[in-house]
Image 1 (tube, rainbow over the protein chains, first blue to last red):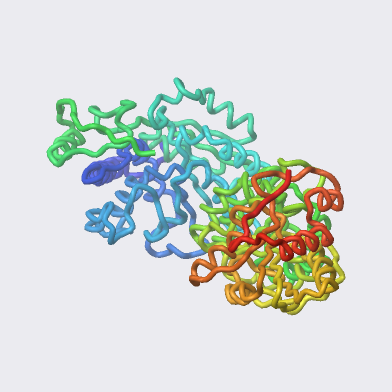
Image 2 (cartoon, rainbow over the protein chains, first blue to last red):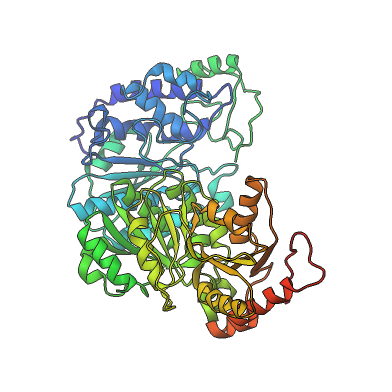
Length: 288
Length: 311
């Protein structure tokens, strides 16, 4: 661990708590993929706050950095981050699932700041490759981040993309794996084991770092080391916890998509702030 | 001028163009020398190529992508639909050996549902040139049009000189009151021969090269329906291609016609060299003409023709 870190860790943690509050508030009146959003919240917040050259001032600037959410159903974490960073009006989150707005379970480009829609897994690694290729052709300096789910790595196109990214030496491209150990209904290692994941990416030719995806210092150290190796795809495996911040749903296979009652939301918000709460009774919805 | 020469000219003159292939270089063997980094071969990865093409288009590029028709339209279908179709990005699909052109490859390589699949994607435009002359006449406009496109690449030489291309318009080769043949793609040459035979039999025969299957020239179809018999000729499954387009169009305008389809009905074709395939499947000009003659002279014509196909 270096001491070069110049991030305000405490402030990031406070903001992350607010992002999680937004996520929890979206998990009612139809619900959302709350667990997968909570696992990705810290890394999304870190990237937008500290690392990516993107913000209100340059949303359409061809020299901006790009972030693609490939797993997609973690988009509540992006909305929460956008609100906290002033990229989206807070009141707009109340429109979640409203027919009059565009805030639904997967990302779409009607929301300023979202670069590409997703929802079908294994697509955005290749879309990100196209963007990274164009930046290389033009001699640009911008960087392209693509956040993948670990379950998403079941899709063969993710691995196709790693092969192609390395063939074209796309060191301006970073795949970040939200390694929360779960796919939709099952722990990954019980269904389609991914480990040793670091070795798999390395064998495919990528330069890999594996870190605690909830530790802002670790995130900062990893991304400050970009590019990990020139001429290679960069991969960050961010070890995370599905449902992070809510012990009552953390690491629970049946808490993937959640649609809580209003009293449960109030209870969960207290839990975010450290209170112990009793088990939740809401039935989870199966949304595939 | 060849396909590759035209693409080279277009892409060298316009920096927006990127030429991509999923390691199918048959149509773009020499273009790398002209385009350098604007030529991208992603290897045997049709899905990744389409996704990357969408990413390039997102950055203002016009990617012209190449792969075998069956893999481009089926293996990568969801990528075409989701990454090019939904955002309406100008990804230009050039499909190699569509329809009967896969001749000896076998059913894995037979793209005979490609028109059905591609025209089902909102925003997608679909074209099937009759021959190389037709292909070269349509491509410049298709490539610079803002929507994604699917072109059944056909570099066969028929010797016919086509009328200038008009987007969304069919090419009316001839008009007739007894029979009007609607066709697209390489079977155009066979229908030309069929028309000659039928005319020698004293029939008034029209022929329309559809060219654009989406947007389709509805007026051309409605006009054809005024003749006593409409014949559709296509190297495609009966479902979802020109026969379906004609049916949809007639129903949309609350009209009807006698329609005799030549298509592949619930079957793949027997693989062989193209002339053998045409003969075996009953798609030579002579076979088409004979079947139409048999139909027009049949004593028990039904109000609406029911497609019947021999195995």
